[in-house]
Image 1 (cartoon, rainbow, N blue to C red):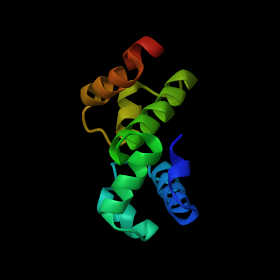
Image 2: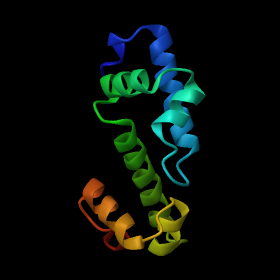
Image 3: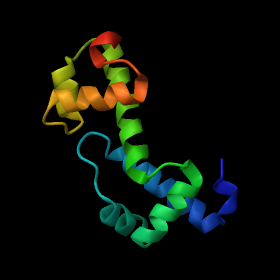
Image 4: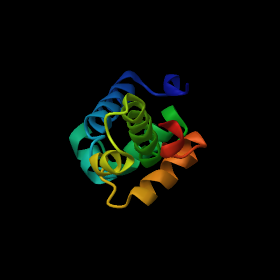
Length: 112
């Protein structure tokens, strides 16, 4: 990973942003401004440092984390695709399924 290119303070800020995103998985993307405020850095610094560490945007990271959590729920077979899509803030199960398929190469219904 590229996190060695950042100083300790910047790495800690990115870790705090990661934690905030993890705590926000159930629901809509909180937005760059809100995450940056929570971490105490500028939105531009957040975007730049986050991409430096993860090689993806903050939103891409959030979306993939959501899909990994959703996949775990699907594998438990306790919830429907519609239920899970709603848990993660998707009003439309079709849109959720499209994002899921983009991440994993298979639709949610193929997992269950």
